[in-house]
Length: 164
Image 1: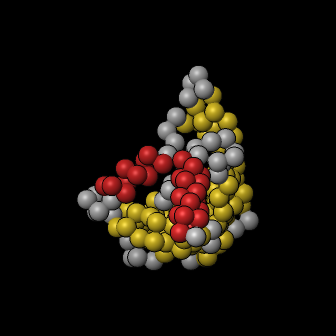
Image 2: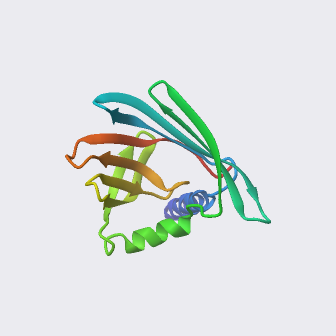
Image 3: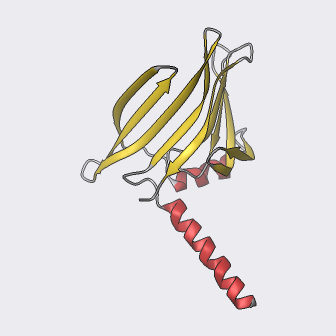
């Protein structure tokens, strides 16, 4: 029985490692939902990023970004060579506390994630907090507050499709 449990645990660990190492890849799709405050009005927000293609010669990834804020919808496509990877996550975690970040377990609608919370204050006093995790595109959650510390937006990870 001991060997069966040990084998099962090793299999689960190796499968979860394969899943984590599978991104970025074409078909990866991540969605965040939450709220945004515009001029005192709270609106629902949904942001989705999806990898459409990869050009092996130019190393360009084609990403579609869909955003819905209140009743407004926007969609555009960007190309980039710089994608979030499991190696970047490992580097962030290794440097997290030294760089002023905080290691946290974060619960989002899509699950619970080990994250590094990094905070940035802009020149106008706006506070941006990002929780970086081991997922495609990296951001599990993001919170933005104005200089008076009033919430401006708070989208959380809603769903992930990765490693297709």
